[in-house]
Length: 436
Ligand SMILES: [Zn+2]
Image 1 (tube, helix red, strand yellow):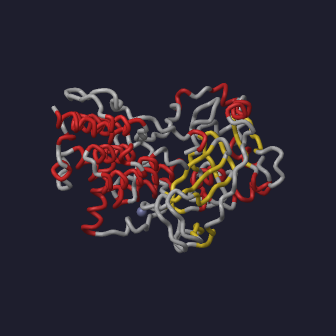
Image 2 (cartoon, rainbow, N blue to C red):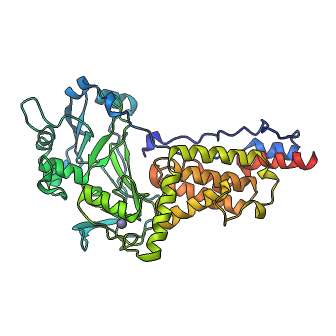
Image 3 (cartoon, rainbow, N blue to C red):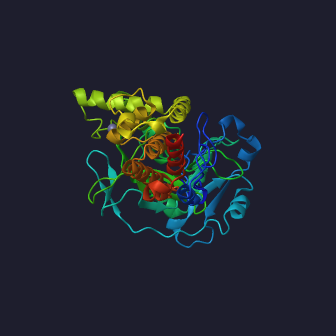
């Protein structure tokens, strides 16, 4: 999500190459094994987005100290100014954490244009082929505010209206030019535009760790699709919003993101959420499916939804760990992988991954996507299926790149399947068993 806070590659939580799995009979390493394990590449831990502080912990005194700062203060180009609503002490804390905050950033080459799109007002169209993980849009927002703060001042005025009124005139024009899907239903036009166009802008700001919202000039023009090809993230160090490709995008294709809080739900559920929150009916290719194809899509999304529950992820992790301990390393690859059954932990990971691929719905934020790929990479390492390790590690690298701007260590795994800690450990174990 933010280049300064991208999680480091950490060795997986499984026993290290020098320890023994329960019930195993690990023999002393041969010289060849020692050489293999001397430069092992750790398989990365799965990425999990930081959780915001619960709202009930909000400090009312901090809320009363809200200040609007035009960032960067000395910048002469109004299109780079951001109206940043923050609590007392925030700027000092940011400068202490990120020297020179907001840090400069290299603008990416422009690979899109904003044009009218049939049935959706304006939209963003790719003007070049874009690879997975590549930055499409990177910009300073027009406005960044805490997601939850008092709407009404002591004299009855709207804090949000006053905030937008204080923006640089060029930014104010850009703000009011954005789409308003709420009409007069919202308390004010400003609130309606915020609700229509706001993105979560990280919950890792110092001082007050609640979620912030950002409204941007270009990224806020990107339309919704339930099979989106781009994902949004935010970098605090540079105060920039990102859109990166989550699928390969061809020149001329519309760039889309998901507006859904819950993308893994049936077509009916998605239409209900989009209608309630944004007042439109989605006509993406997944929502246009009918009959058996629609049923198949709905079932795949429900399978993803069920797997994404933290309790399910924990249970599947535990089951997978048992599978490894109980002798997966002794089975031949062909016997161990049965794609026709979901009863097997590896079969389950494969079927959830297949559902994610089919739907273009990866549920990255809860850690499901990488926990599934992690299991597949580890299992294929144990089964010494080098090609499969390369494939799944590459998928993990691309997906983490799109969401965070870093491959998180997956690229090294994809390039060196035989040098990972898991490959080395189970090679040693296999030899130990065959000798024993
Ligand atoms: Zn749709």
